[in-house]
Image (cartoon, rainbow, N blue to C red; front, side):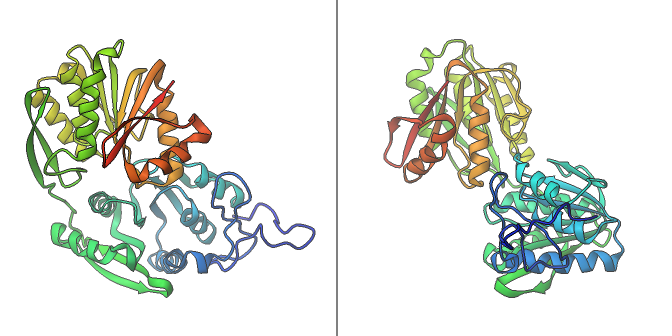
Amino acid sequence: MNIQRNRTNPDGDKRYVTTDLPIVAGNVALYRSPTGDYVIQKFGKEFPELYVGIGFVVKELKKLQARSVVVREGGAGIVPTLFALALPGITMHISLWSANRALLDRNLEENINRFIGISVEKDISHRADVCVLVHESYQSQASVVEEVVGLINASAMGILYVISHKNKGVETLAELITKNTGIQYEIVERGKGGARVLKFASRGKKATLQAAKNSYTTFIGGTPVTLETGSDAFSKNGVDTGSAMLVKYLSSCINSIRNRNIWDLGCGTGYLGIAAALLCRNAYVVLSDVNTRVLEAARSNVTRAGIASRVQIVLSDGPQAVQGEFDLILSNPPLHIPKQHLIWLLTQSRRKLVKGGKMLLVVEDSRVKELRELLEPSIGVPRIVFRGGTHDILEIDK
């Protein structure tokens, strides 16, 4: 594969080229943003863990004579782009946990002539000789454990490399994975700036992880409801303060919603959506989440609450797989995800509202100002309709 074009401008300005790259050389431009000229300048200095990880793993893939690889990452496209340039003959499946792939596409398109041998999907749906996980600090521990197990099982050679940083708690996480699965790991590379590369090897053993189950009972509109949780649940031992506040607010205004088509966005184990269905007995409710394991708990909770005939459960990152329009969207939004993904999630979900519909978000009061500023350019400033001390409720209309 060849670089598409020379990015040095006539004045010799090098700002359109990324320098200090591992493995590959040439006029490579790696972008920070899907728009604008925000090119990474000194790659090794700014991304030491990726510099070390990419260089090491490429050498390992060559040594193993791997002909295919799954790269699981968040959509920045840095690792897949450099892998493709360094290993032009390899078949690469890029698997994203983020729904926003605009930056990935830009980094690939700017540097690689053709996408032959490269596929992009949102799930770990392909097998390959070797798998690679780019570990991010904003992922929950439970979700990373699940990712690691899935990737180990997707590797024909039973090998997974995890590119990370010591400050992200990856070594503690690796110990937890070994304890729960029996799959052994070793730190195969330590580099500058705290970079770490971990290698998991299954040695023919299928990786399995037993999800820990828990439950608690709460009251919704005077009705006792028992909710099953698990290791991936946001709140394992009871209703979190923000969600409880949103349900209390919802109970005061539920009768004003017209046709009562309701969507619980990022439902987790289903508390908000179940509460909406119980408070409004003629409501049709959709529960959606990107995590399959919490959706299993949500399904059990819906059945236990006796509302399965009025509730649909959908595996979806935001609105992608959700059908129809809604009078009301409820969410305790995941503020830990990258800002651009959060903006995409909320702006695209708002499009699912009917005219006159509204979205209610519960947000920690310390994060309200930040979220309102993030959303202002795309959908305007959300109104604060309730202040609860620790959390505020924001309303977005259509």
